[in-house]
Amino acid sequence: MRSFWCKTTVVLCGIALVASSSACSSSNKEGDGASTGSGSSDSALAGATYTAAEVAAATGTYKVRPLFAVPKKLPKRYRFAFLSPGLSYPYFATWSQGMKDAAKFYGVDLDEADLNFKYDTELNAYQQVAVKQPTVIGSGQMNDATYNAAKRDGAKIVMIDGSFKDVVHFGVDDEQVGKLAIDTMADQAKAKMTGAWKGRNVLVAGITAASCTPCDTRVKASFADAETKLGIPAANTTMLTPPSQDPTSSAASTFTDFLTAHPHDTVLVVSYGDEPVIGAINAAKAAGRKDDVLAVSNGGDSAARIALRDPSNAGILVAAVDYQPYAEGWNWIEAAIATTMGKPLAPYVVDRVLTAANVDQFYPNDKSSK
Image 1 (cartoon, rainbow, N blue to C red):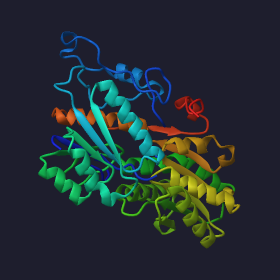
Image 2: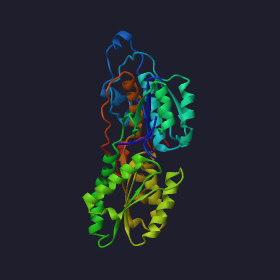
Image 3: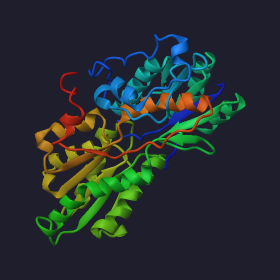
Image 4: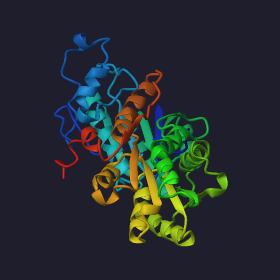
């Protein structure tokens, strides 16, 4: 599974891939902070840990599944820091909110820096937060300079949605979610191929990002599954790598060119995330090719949920594989605590798919938070 992200005890890092909900709390309202886990006497808390039911209640409609049973009384007050890849991106903004709420709930301090997708500034950002001597540092993208600096500081490194050298990690299984995207659209694709698309050439376009190994892994897994499940040969698969930092508009431009080059073909669209798929859908509609495209996005961020609710996307956007980014952010804090304490983590599970029919059920607060 994965690739990228990360003074003293632990460095956590991760990449979810470009590609991206907001906060939630015990009040069950997005945007509110989670309830704090402090307030009981030390004697009452000794040896006690937060249960899965308590975590689910504290995270409201997100119903986060904990990866580690956090003690209600930590050995000491920990300070963590996280270098976000880009807080303007919905997926990473949701990570951020999950981290903040979990930090408040578990009683730890959290500092955050925004790389704004300028990964060449990561080492400098690391050095700035390291002066506060955090127990754990997380980063949006791991590079050799940051990795080496962390090692010199005697830091342990844990990654979220990525791996780098000997780094411990948790998060999305890239091959699994890539296959899940094809599995999710398989029935509709088969219906198209024996119906409206019968006799037409079917392609699979996988939208990735430059220098993103997890992105490539997800897309390649989709290609392999498309051959196994749908009989689409490898020769009919194309990996597209849009330029620039705006995954929606750049993907739209790249996919427009792809459609122009294949005027008579039909296309299944997959990607590492949500925004590139939304860009491709926008391009297909603008080109009058909506009926020639089926798509599934990966991530389940706010942009994907908006797109699923848009009636104009019916018949083209099948679903969004939900990574539950808020839960990943919350679990990052748990992973930081666990690694600091030398404890193991449970695996992170992605098993939910969002559709136009169920998105309001899983994210009922989206509309009220506008």
